[in-house]
Image (cartoon, rainbow, N blue to C red; front, side):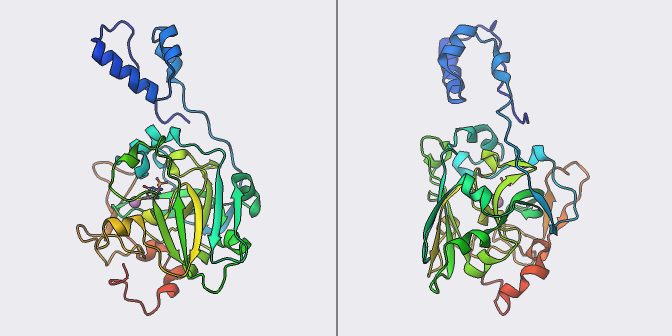
Length: 322
Ligand SMILES: Nc1nc2c(c(=O)[nH]1)N[C@H]1C(S)=C(S)[C@@H](COP(=O)(O)O)O[C@H]1N2
Ligand SMILES: [Mo]
């Protein structure tokens, strides 16, 4: 799908050398070779091609996990993203994440397990039947989407390595490719981006090991080739482009906790009653519905997954354990 085109440059333009040079550098960064530029004299229609189409990934709808709301248009799901390794703006990942190297890819599971194992993506696609699940997603920044993901419960993968009795938490460690990730020069958070779940949260059937969306493999900007999706928590818990899963005894400290412990806690359960220190979490804006008159929606406790997950937090003070 064409979500983005390189800007057209007219060959008739008379351009000062410095501007020409920086545009040339920029186009090189955008993946265009000097040879092509030189030979064609910038007949830029050649470069206006859409990115390589994504491979299809078939999956069986899981009717137990289908949110009865209109899915967010695919073009919005793949072009309005948070993936700080590729920049801070929502439009940065779709523009820059084409440089992410996704082949070969290894996902290693280690730590408090009887059988540490490494999987490649083909292994992961075959490990359990692929399901399509339509999940409600809520970013801590106040926007939301409804996304048809493809994957299976993370528990299917964790079972393979036989967690020991000491495994109390799961830590996700994501890819760090400094040469391919323009965002990691900025020290907004510590890289590699890491996240964590309590073991019972990780084993909950809703927690999805995710390999695709909208009938295709994951686009780079959405966390190719494999990510987590934890729909009752704020989006930052759903780590993208995972390379390692570590089972550990102590609560992992996430990149976001290190950056701002008072704003981003370990639990990060969606909760309209607990404000972020700088803004309310009571309502949200559904991406794809914006317009002058579109109303904000009320945010639901546990993002609408209360029936499924509330028991995990029985007796906990959710204002303290934010
Ligand atoms: N590695 C990594 N994973 C990440 C992020 C990130 O910056 N880096 N951003 C998180 C945040 S804040 C959100 S809201 C979701 C966004 O996922 P999406 O772009 O597929 O909607 O990814 C999460 N996972
Ligand atoms: Mo987010």
